[in-house]
Length: 281
Image (cartoon, rainbow, N blue to C red; front, side, top):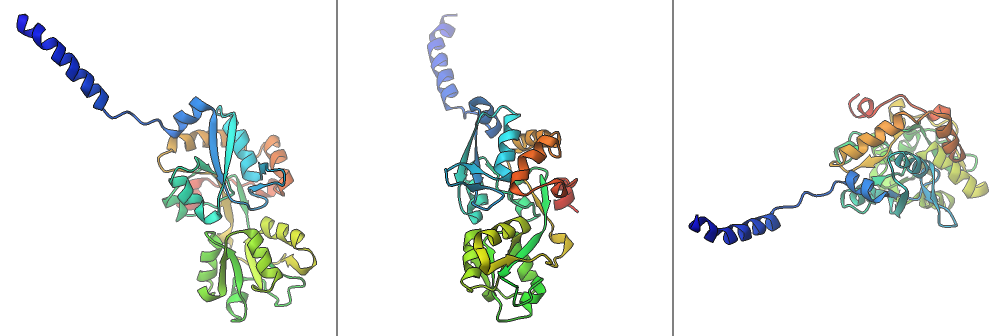
């Protein structure tokens, strides 16, 4: 008994040291979000998906959806982090923000890097060209066939791969950081066309005035239909799953359609496809 008592202080000290040295269990993103009521969304300025207004407010189809859906899981504050499109996935992985809410298309390649929610819209592409479309461009094939044509594509988007697959040489593809840069390339004739989502190109045509227009007869592979979704880090499956549950009960509702209507979306942009349909067709 005396020997046991003599070791008691030592054993207590050893237990305390072990407790201090034991690795702490890291808080998950979902746990932090639930504890703080805040989440950070990453976006790139691309109307109408996600953009900064003149008053500094961040809006667009994806941020407005994010505000409502995250509100359903207890988030009271959504902080927006602006970055270039090509930096969205690296920024998410690096922890600069917790979710990408920028209208990002789901692709099998991106799905290897991030976890997507189920898509909340579908949308096709079109071209931005000089007024009157003097080169008669209606497809990637038209551009590939004319070695005098350059096309402006936003860096990091799916359209770059589509252009390469259609036979457009890299030397005739201008990779630019934003839709505004695409507009300027076409307006100044440094590029004879730009390609992007139909809503983005139509918006640029409005901004660009009399010198440009968006084509209405773009001939594209049906497989290029874009499906936009929120994106999460690979380790945040619990957060993604909770968001998916919220989306399933809300996408297609009257409230959802009212929310996205100001950005040019309507019932024609609804899709029944799930993430699995897109990444594992």
